[in-house]
Image (cartoon, rainbow, N blue to C red; front, side, top):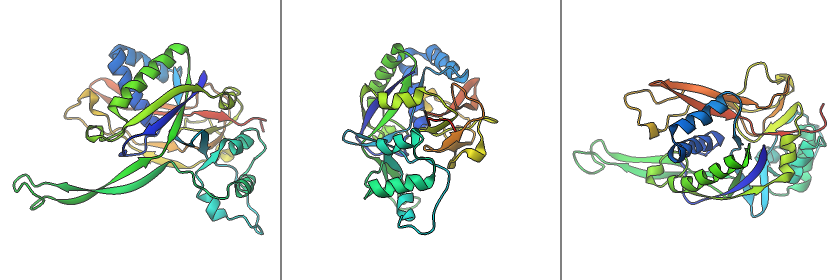
Length: 316
């Protein structure tokens, strides 16, 4: 696979942060619109059979030409007598490529060494990807036509996204061209929920080669950092030597198929967050799960949970 960087410029608010699984869902619906249901089934079956035509990261922040990456979870190690401000450093979510490269090259091996480097090189943590806010709405009583009766004022939590980018690993040039066409379509459709009221509007940039990152994607070892949330497989990871944070997620099925009178909620899944570091028991081509989260009217509904791995060099 060849790795590309695609810049993302947000033009509106978002209902939720568009993670890798949100992006994959949007790409799937775009695939359906442009190429038809049979081609979409073929695409999904390839993912199901661990032969994906592309892998996608979550949205990551950038500042002009500088790309930032999730701060890796590494082995815990601290010293008592130190000037390091651990509380301040813990708040850092993203690090520049030059520091990530030290981790990927095996020069930074634990949390202490990472914090020492961050304390030395990052005087202020100004890089963030999202800001959350709440905006007011009024619900209207149908009888009174005002906020009286059953109407009222309520607040909706929204996400504002800063300038960012995604990484995409594609199997071949044909896949890249199809994704480019789909991204052009998604600029009109939007990403995530509440698209009908103007949420999720973005502009996608060109597919740019990223050779500095690609070598860490291709040179496989038994340790990697993921740039996308992972639904972990059983018996794959050495958990005693893996370092991760997790969250649970239960997504709703998009209404593009116009399902009626059905439970639209997918099964709940556990994700391991971006920046998690894994030690694997046995090396594989693809890590994570393309999870069958629901079957409705004979249609299988999937939840994307594949890793976008950057492999730590140097073995043990």
